[in-house]
Length: 374
Image (cartoon, rainbow, N blue to C red; front, side, top):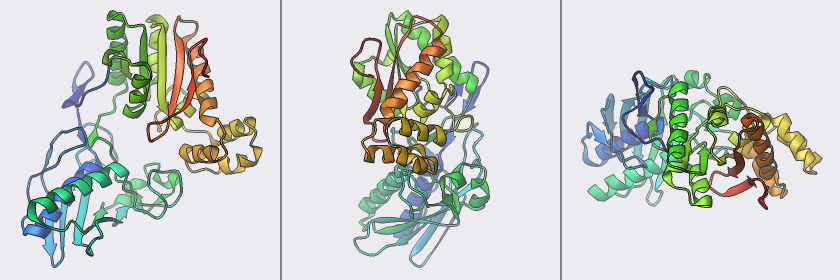
């Protein structure tokens, strides 16, 4: 049962307020600043359209402009999520670019730069993730079309004190130096509540069972959920928004079984499950690169183990494995399936594990008992 974007997440006692990602805030700032650069006036509040169609309005905290530039800033509201950037000032300065340059991005003070491979943005680029980049391109195009402008601009994003805030994130370990990342895939921050999320998982299983379904899918995110749904033509009722709580789903199925369960997730999440972790959140479990190096050696590439141990991210390891045509994702899927079956402890639930990459391609699969795959 997919969690919908309402105004909050109900945990049975109160409602947790949702907030906005740094990417959504930066997009609103960029729209306001570019509009001011072109027209001389800042829209305030400024309305943007998020990837799933929501249209929030943002009040500007600061605004200024000069010859060839305009700046707008918004205070990030993360809702009730314990986000390190809650209350941070997101500042965007837009400058005219050269003809034909399109939208280019710069990291201002407090925004990091990528220095290692394995992330969605290549080394040397500002740590502004792909979805926020596209959202900003979209609002620049919107303003350009509305006012007959070229759309050739440089967008600089800054976060005062961002370098200090970044020390409380995984950015330093990932090789993002100088500050924070500008993140977000939906534009919305969903408040993190373990009990609320597990309660939602349990209710999803209950609904599926009550509907007579014999096959459900638990996915770590929307990309893997789409793959699992398409693989088996599953109805919406069969889709369980598992998130990081693989253990919450599996333990509930011990006493409330459904005959078939597809577990779907990205390579990093499924690697953690295959290592034996049942909570896949980055704050409570980590990919073990020594463990991955041993799996690479098992697959006949001991010469890669040193590189795997020194890898920056799980995706970096996956890239190395793909270059050598090693079925590492397949191996991870098989081991994750074993962990899932052990956790079910004999409950009448057959399990399939599906591993997908960032593009939504199926790269590893351990099928149900008797299936030809896995």
